[in-house]
Figure 1: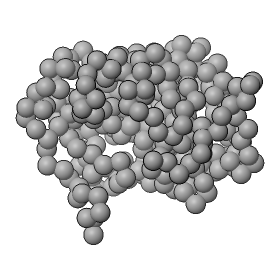
Figure 2: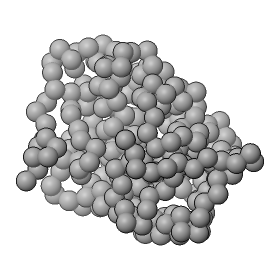
Figure 3: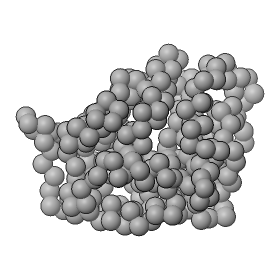
Figure 4: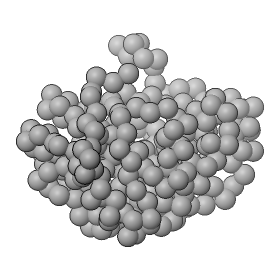
Length: 262
């Protein structure tokens, strides 16, 4: 369920963002750009340079599409906050990244559980300017569509621990490339600087067996040895590993059930 109301583009494909909404975007991008300086992967920084977000107003979907198409042929698609998993994967299987058409209210500037346009644009679009990354997303969408809804939910764990909350080794040390953390002022810092979470080498089978929660800082991050390793994940027999993960069962959660945190 969402408490936000999505905005629809007009007949010209333009969304009428208010002055306050544009101000929220400006505040978010200004402070996040400082936070990621020594924490985001080199590829993410390069992607930001390629996409050239406006600092003063929320970019229109059609503006982003012109830039993305030039690099990889991808587009962003206007969607409400939350869409069914099958629809989500159907879009990315067709080179369309779903991007919510609302932005968080000022009272939720620091944290929003639902994916708003800042999360979608700032967190995910920069890496979609890389052909190999875009191909990975497209292929992942196709695989997800080929399995049952229950298996799709388990398969999403790979997506969660890479595209959303992935870390990678770089010449400067461990850096973030996941859109979930790079659009979050707190988790960007937490994922790199904090001694609390575990950080383990990425392993596809382990990722498939690892439960997660969406409403807390992640207690565990998986780290790629290098960014290019992301594109090799789907060279494996993913459906076989999916079945193996079900046979072996989940690891014990590193978090308490929701409502039992205290």
